[in-house]
Image 1 (cartoon, helix red, strand yellow):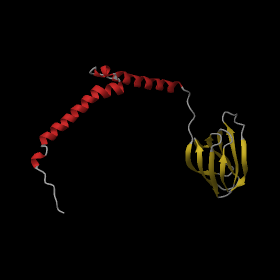
Image 2: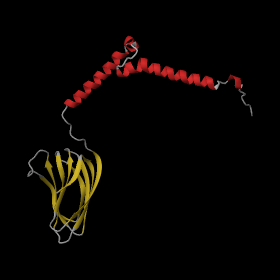
Image 3: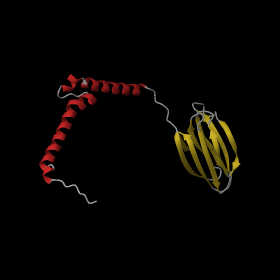
Image 4: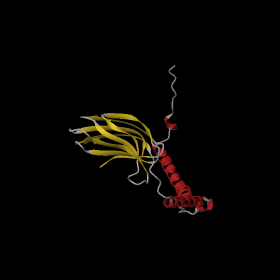
Length: 191
């Protein structure tokens, strides 16, 4: 059970042999990089061997494709921001008779889950949307009333900004806590 393999120390490579092998590998790697990788990847051929092997043309073709792709990207019109799933939270304090808005930029059919609660009273609210590019007086109200809280799910019927207008109708300051989650590109409080 205790069969051990005996190794003859004279059969092992010496430290000098290991250094030579390491130096040889480093030299071969450097030569391979200069002769093949630089011409094939970057179109740079310091030895001329890459041209004879057809590697320089390959590297130049890669660079031409990259340059063309860059100029095509520069010529394209700016694309709209991409909506990603996100979650946001706002805390808003309103003095008596003060109003404010929070709006989310949404694509048509994008979805939003929301909840808001009021501490210290009730507020008038108008949940509405404004189509992208429409005059500022064009909007669609989805829900309005006076309440101390609301929650729900919303699917944008058109591209634009959608959100809430709140007005403190009480005689004391109130604090509104808003939480949103969904697919929208941005959300902000408007003054």
